[in-house]
Amino acid sequence: MRHTKVKDLLNSTTTLQEVNAKGWVRTFRNNQFIALNDGSTINNIQCVVDFENTPEETLKRITTGAAVSVIGTLVESKGAGQKYEIQVTKLEILGDSDAEKFPMQPKKHSLEFLRENAHLRVRTNAFGAIMRVRSVLSYAVHSYFQQKGFVYVNTPIITGADAEGAGEMFQVTSLPLDNLPKNEEGNIDFKKDFFGKHTNLTVSGQLEGETFAMALGQIYTFGPTFRAENSNTSRHLAEFWMIEPEVAFNDLDDNMDLAEDFIQYVIKYALDNCQDDLKFLEGRLLEEEKSKPQAERSEMALLEKLNFVLENNFKRVSYTEAIDILRDSTPNKKKKFQYLINEWGADLQSEHERFLVEKHFKCPVILYDYPANIKAFYMRLNDNTEPGRETVRAMDILFPGIGEIVGGSEREERYDVLVEKMEKLGIDKEELYWYLDTRRFGSATHAGFGLGFERLVLFVTGMTNIRDVIPFPRTPGSAEF
Image 1 (spheres, helix red, strand yellow):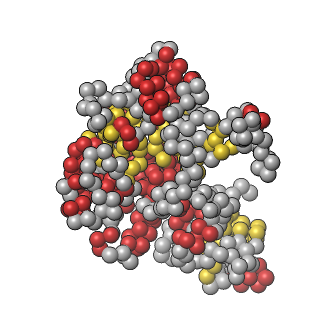
Image 2 (cartoon, one colour; image 1 turned 45 degrees about the vertical axis):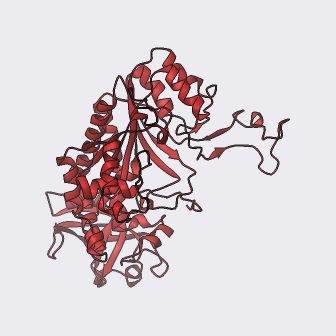
Image 3 (cartoon, one colour; image 1 turned 90 degrees about the vertical axis):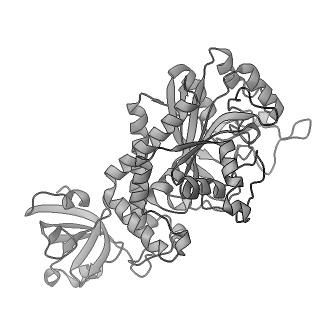
């Protein structure tokens, strides 16, 4: 008999039918009531066992974490809390679970404990909900761009280019680390390496994506990216997923419009398709915040916050205007910021971004026209900016609780200007000859952005640590599982 998903059983419109359900035991009460979950929904289905006619040996094996198959009649439940239950006629233990050793007990566990058991934490309500929301958001990303006629491009994971120019990259090599070959200058001879050159794990698919946009018009990437940045914070991972659209003939304003529309689409898709999970996560967040001081609690509940993003246009503010606001702000004057804002040209920190969003404007904010010297080489230099205060056509989208969630720009399409910037920063033109070729053969205005997928999942689920929204987090000193 083919088994039916718990979600479909709970949404059934007919009863008194014989059904088969398979899943894992969450709880077993009074030797009679199994709470069964198969991962298709946050909700369990109650399975009522005829304990008088079930062998004692079988009843002992119905433990938290055990995999079971039940066959029985789907009936309306007499108990509170569920619409339907299964009156079990046949029960089979598919996989035993030692109740004393199984870490995921039916009680509240700390997030730190669950990270140490990341291979099992998805069996809990919270992580089941987070991963289902993550899956739906992933689908929504592809749905949005495919509906808009974007071409999905798989850019390389192994690359010789440092897109950000930051140098925080994981090296890829097949050379024997205990006997590295050296050249005549005494340096490592990468010509003897697998690719014949120095290579790394990618930090971004943007540069390769630009080459495709200049032929296909509008493309997007959605894949893993890597940063060897020693940041042990709640917002950083060494391995994460990045969404990067790139559009030929788009300028900065078009880019801001696209990013805002895209974010609102995927959030709405999650709201429409993850109601049960989001309601659970909202309740979890409210419970967690009870232990925080009033000043640190969210002003809005999770669903209210998500709807707020849908119902309000993002505020567009220039970097220069934002600096003036921050310089004159109470936390800056009273030295409450960890990094004080004293002059134009300062690189904004998360505390500044969150102040603008959460305290000053009280809505998502798009900052644009940043100082050139704090942004990447490929961003378009603004015309007519005063010497010493050059700005680029960059934009960052700032969200409550997160800070920066999107970074993007109009790209520098002028060959001579791009070459000059690369020379000034010491970026190898020979290494990136293929990137410069897009400015030599049919160059045009184009723009794009990058959205860290985990930061989006963080916002939508209401979680506060980015390690809790990716299946197996990779962080400094930790590559478990």
